Image 1 (cartoon, rainbow, N blue to C red):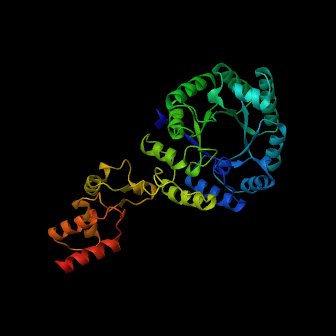
Image 2: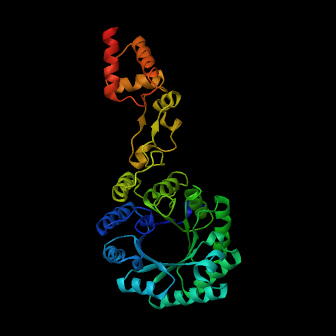
Image 3: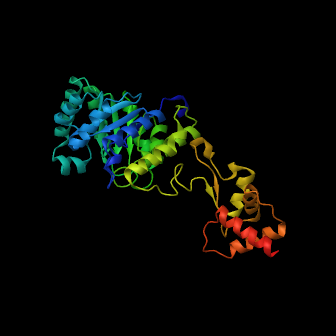
Length: 375
């Protein structure tokens, strides 16, 4: 059961998140994000891939100097030069990756399986000789032959790697397939297993949770689900699900999620989808009359979690779908006293204006006063 296990979260907003098309964070912005992630309570913060560009290298240096509780990890290819960068900066952990699928071996590296194994082993040993803590990621693991994937995992474990990560690089796994894959790998290794899920089919969060159910210890996330193409599992979805659905108590500061989300929106210039779970504008908004009536009586009727848990507020929309109970409750909260006949008249007027998708307090006050004068 997950409830009895230590679950870890690796946030990759500063690395994978910056790979989102159109996004480039400054060092100052990365520092601000890292500090809030640390207060939130993530276990690992991926600082970036120093070899990408001078500004990323400098940012990793700055981030590595921060006094954080989270473990700092650099990112890089399975090559000595990338490892040398991490060593020069002084980052304690490094995540190195190498594509293991037939597509990667043929089209990215033009190597045989045997040649790939030799390169992977020598690089891991080189990193360990440099006294780095290492996480090895099998890129495109979900499309790698399972026997070869096990061979890679056992190889890096024997070479001294501290963690083994499975990357669903193109997001083609399903929750069932994820569980089967992770179960298999966990049973063959003694070191902790991580997963890196992409959201190309909209299943990144489900796959991440399935991986944890199957024995993975750590999952990669980003704030607002940023990342290549369709991104990674969002930090908010994974940690709130683990807390509320799986009853995991990791002392994550869920109330910080809206602030983190807004911070990254302001830096990335990418607007958050209104229907994004947990942090989206509509996550705790109710519209249909029967829904609103039930929520007014008992919020659990249409809410899996209370908005207060994640520092959000409930919002009830007034429009053509509104019922009498919802409208009466809203007017009462506004301090307006009206008769039953006036209520019916106000509701009829609202329903006669379908083009108006939301009635604010000022609109309702004006309408109610107009109807009361006429009466």
